Image 1 (cartoon, rainbow, N blue to C red):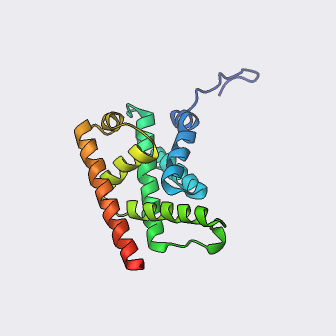
Image 2: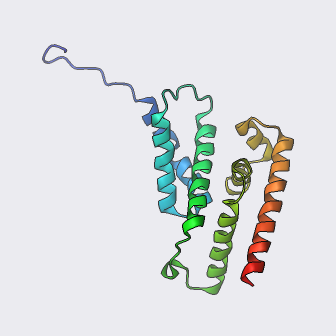
Amino acid sequence: MPPPGTRLAPESPQPLASLFENHHAMVFRTAYRVTGSASDAEDVLQTVFLRLAKRDAFSDIDKPESYLRRAAVNAALDVVRARRESDSLLIEDMPSSAACTELRELRDELRRALATLPPKLGEVFALRFFEGHSNQEIGKMLGISQVFVAVSVHRARRQLQKWIEANRTQKG
């Protein structure tokens, strides 16, 4: 205990607080692009940083932005998968114009299809098409070759297309 009247030097910011301050907006945006919902993106943001806080050490993360982006994509895909099972969209929440309704339905259908992909394919697809990263950037983030990324993107697109076609056939 310091003597009375002694001023303590301010503590340096905690590494987790620093990571949150520097990357929370990116995590939210990433989650929002995958889920299409601000409330789901907020849940993903909380989940990502709670999981990080539970780790024994996170100073060993070499590339925090890449790590957090991947964590956000994976947590967001988990939310989409869980939503697929409960599919509780209220009619009042739907946009009013026909064009907006069709676009929203298409996005929802894509998210449901994305939830059926194996986790690695879903992650690669989301990083490529929701986040706009190149195959080379994704390869560096995930520690895989650019060729493997391209093959994964192709497989994901093909599986999504098959799922959407099968789903439309069942509805029609």
